[in-house]
Image (cartoon, rainbow, N blue to C red):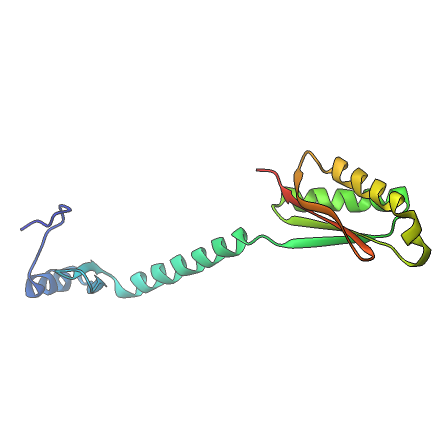
Length: 152
């Protein structure tokens, strides 16, 4: 007999005899199926392959995870220091991570928020070819924040 998918359908006793003749094992692959699906393979090799498949799927799951990295700086940050953060943000966006930018105002810096907004706009403009703003810039108390996500 042949199943719907074209594979042979054997009685259990015939399948066991065939496996013994080949010197291999009869392994049940899908128990819920009617009739149950079995393979004639070396059992140790079968276990090894199953273990390898699960570890590969875990690796792929880890790769897909997206994280958010935050960069904090003040409104009067030096040009070179800001450029270093921009370069690092570019790397993160290329790797598929999100980047949160936060300008922190301390003390009398609150009266000069325009400097912080300029730094934020410059940062967003510099990484604009790799990322787009998901939200922001938003002012929340002493913090001006924006979230950038990678372009697709």
